[in-house]
Length: 158
Image 1: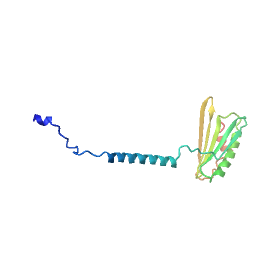
Image 2: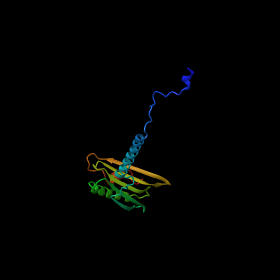
Image 3: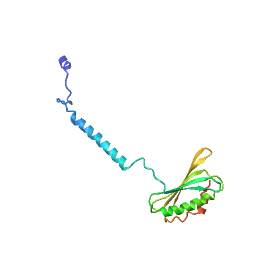
Image 4: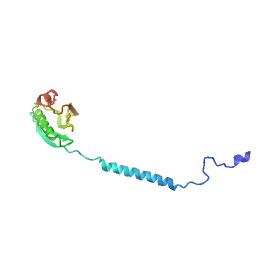
């Protein structure tokens, strides 16, 4: 009985032959190369550093003498004429502001299906960053609500 404890016994789960590590290594290398190839594919297909340039950009001088930059963004060429006509209305409304506005930049965009209008205003007031976003939806797709009166109602100058 003592002898059986003294002799090393090979566990039942171990193989009596040594496994060749080459197939395991080859599998690991294949997986790593596949991951690298997949990463390169996605970086080429969806680049991270693309910058969307504005459709147009203009500097407005308000009644207060302040300058505000108006930038238009469009996803497609289909809505450019609508966007530009809305920009004219927005610029006229901004230029009527009598007091200083906290906005240095105003962004205007319209969705591809002409249902969503977005006005984003970015600036600084009292040393603090200020951001305001106005989204308007028009299911009928003709944006008839967009006017000087509507812009005055959303307090564009404040």
